[in-house]
Length: 77
Image (cartoon, rainbow, N blue to C red; front, side, top):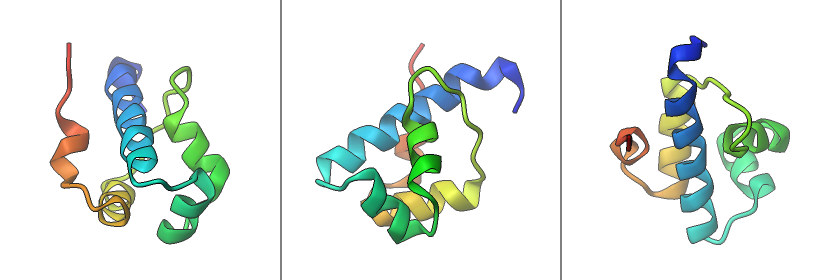
């Protein structure tokens, strides 16, 4: 991951956490639905960790959370 994109990855993670909680899912439940580990989901969502993810992973998470993928990519300054 390029460090210049760290803030965008942080925002994606925070949005994943927001929509996951909105759906009433735990990190473990989301991880199970998308075939990832709970630790990976935890790293994605942690505001102090910038964790890169693939588009496939983002799309899988979007499907599991019933959220349009572009919602994760609408960045705020």
